[in-house]
Image 1 (cartoon, rainbow, N blue to C red):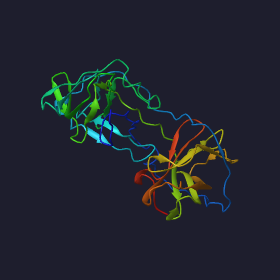
Image 2: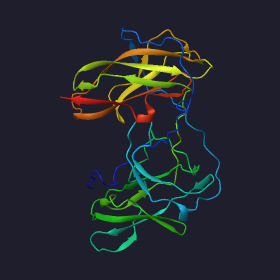
Image 3: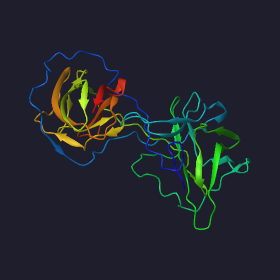
Image 4: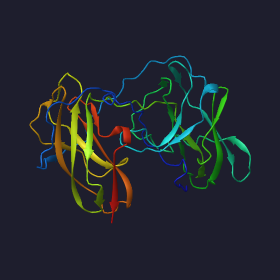
Length: 317
């Protein structure tokens, strides 16, 4: 089975709908939050648990005659919706998409459109367990329902086939997939049920990163992350935040815990940490977005520069 960058033969990656809790906060940080020139220590830890929105009860069925076109989303940040298929119903109220749609396509050899076989049970493998999914897809207005379509490999003696002009049918409505999506060299397809990937729960904190404008591949650098509390209520933690640095959606280091003595961030206050990072030697040179995500001890996420999908940097050789 041949899979290329525009083929739905591989497992889709997680998607997350982003709603920033702290981004809309108003107020002024009135205390001194200037960074220290000392680089803070950070110890490696396992991946933290980040809280997500609780599952929702099923509601009225979404009207797919009011849905927008199926989208192919490419993940741009660790906290963003990840690469995969998405459909945005246009209902004015919360609604539910459930069940498994029927996948059809045009056979590239015969030129005929027909349902695509589902393939042997489990042939495509299990869905990625790292992806948070809630079934069915109960969505609010503007929120996307997700779907995974994966090609199934051929058994010995089977002849692989390829399909274009893919569509999915739910009830009486047929929705085309983006024209760039194809199935190549498969003996069927595995289609998931409609699901929603619940958004992270965000701490009532803002964060910004200051880093050198130019970073070199294979070299260390230091940067400063400032975490601010624009609200009057103190934000406490039992241990210092666990964070991971990235370039766009790709992690460039392991999860690490800041070694600090702070017990949180007081209301209308801020705290700054100077940390160390490294650009991998195989990073593609050019313009990039430096991303920083952290989890507090309560499991809430802190995102740096969410509005701009990270901090603009240039990577050189």
